[in-house]
Image (cartoon, rainbow, N blue to C red; front, side):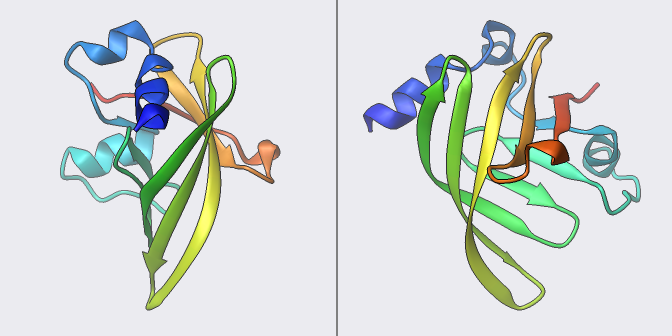
Length: 114
């Protein structure tokens, strides 16, 4: 329970207003009902991370630094299920940066959708 409390403390103050879904451009297009491409990412803090062909439910969140959290997730897609780890970092302006914990070069910027 304390981990979830810490997680929400790490969210930017602006996020607490109306927005609880963050995405890249393709993810925002998908949320708007448009056809998204395969680099789609949608992040629902405390709930899930959705990609083009898989959805990952957040199981645990561990703070690893100021504004950095590693999420343990249970993913499923294309008939498979697996556990994975994603790093979420607060971004300087109203959003987050997400990447697989072991692949920091695969960063994706996420922002509230318009």
